[in-house]
Amino acid sequence: MGPWTGEALRIGRVSPVTTKIRSAVALVCAAFVLSSCGFDYATDRENTIANGGYDLDSSVKILAARIVSVEDGSGVLIGNLVNSAVTTDSVDPEDNVASEALTVDSISGEGLTTTFEPIAVAPGESVNLSNDPVPVTGEGVVAGRVVHLDYEFSDGTQTSVIAVVVRPCFEYSGIQVPGADTATCEDLEAELPAHGGEAEAGAEGH
Image (cartoon, rainbow, N blue to C red; front, side):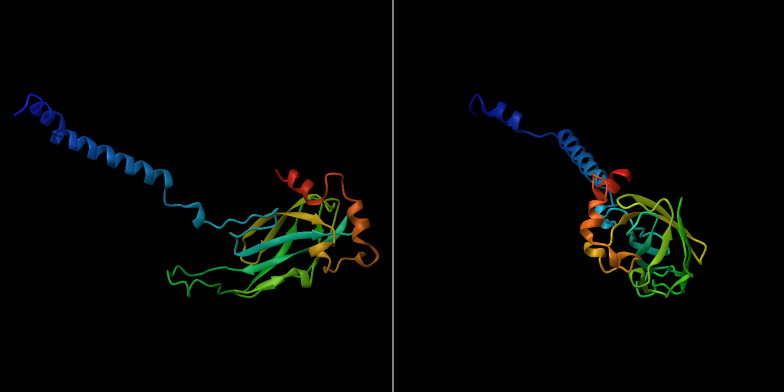
């Protein structure tokens, strides 16, 4: 045996204690990685990127609520209402469907008045208010700003959303708004605040 062979063997030998330490460190690192990620992944949750107007947690989901206005002080409320109320705890997805008709009994907000009959939403169905907009009046209706709307449903639940007040231009040009026939988008856009429509609305929403 050469003069360096024994030293080389001593250095290369891994003791049982060292092996246990390395195993423990590996387990701790693995636990850290799992705990940092968790099990409630962001990609598993609903993520709606929009400038307000949505609530996906209520028995009647609110989608894309907007107030379309030609003149400040009055307009119409649009958006989609989806009846997703579930009355079963079954794990079978086919059983977890809305099973009762619900109505939107009231929609209110500070400085706002709405006029409409209760809006019925059949189980698992939706209602597009663009086809029959809800009249809204009040000092809160100012184009380019946002308003807080409180919805009450026939099952006793409530929800709130933030809705942007917009002019009947571009994607909103087909909405039936009183006075829309006599106004042009160029004129309406020119009347908006210097910051511009929804940009100001987004800033005030924070």
